[in-house]
Length: 64
Image 1: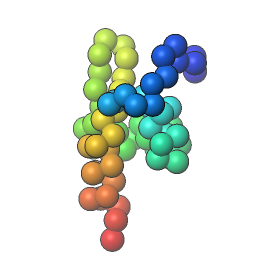
Image 2: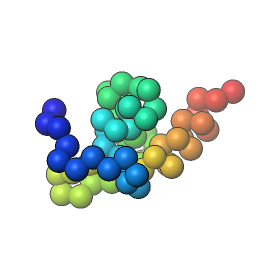
Image 3: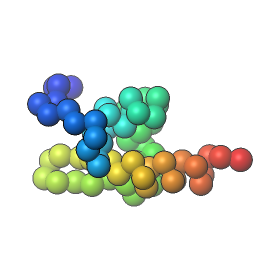
Image 4: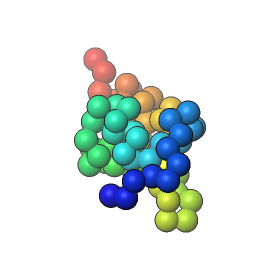
């Protein structure tokens, strides 16, 4: 994977890599959960994850 040219951790949307680092999950798991939670945003070939929707889904589906 190529390194990001601009890595702004304060951004509203995360790449898969940033989401994996933020959530302490693997990239494949992040990709699967992002798809399940409909938190993927596509801009051309670029893919971003909406962390609010991502974490709401995880809490709703996987917490006791």
